[in-house]
Image 1 (cartoon, rainbow, N blue to C red):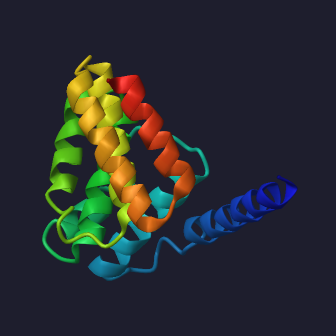
Image 2 (image 1 turned 180 degrees about the horizontal axis):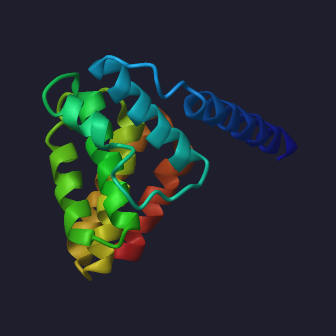
Length: 167
């Protein structure tokens, strides 16, 4: 137990250091569109991992603009996923589901199964808010499959249990 706590503490410190680096980049330095998109996506990911619920798409917007036209399926999925989270935290469930639907279009080419699993969990949460328990169970099952594929046992079990809660 203490070993896992130590790992979580180290991860938290790494995320805080990473956020410090991202936030101290000189705003006068002009980044290329690709670098700006990567910065935007990484900052969104780091904020989310550190527990900051960003209710505006201003941070993720450059990544969405860039990856909607370029990049691989993993980047497209993540950009739309974090855009959806921003809408979700802002209380705009329709915009969140629209972004999650756009992210879902890239599941076929996605190699990051943990990200795909998180997308399915986010969709499940929205379906639960809509009292659509059948779709919630389908999304929870899809998440379980993704987490199993990437070897994330804890998330796999959690997703399986959420299938039971949704059904």
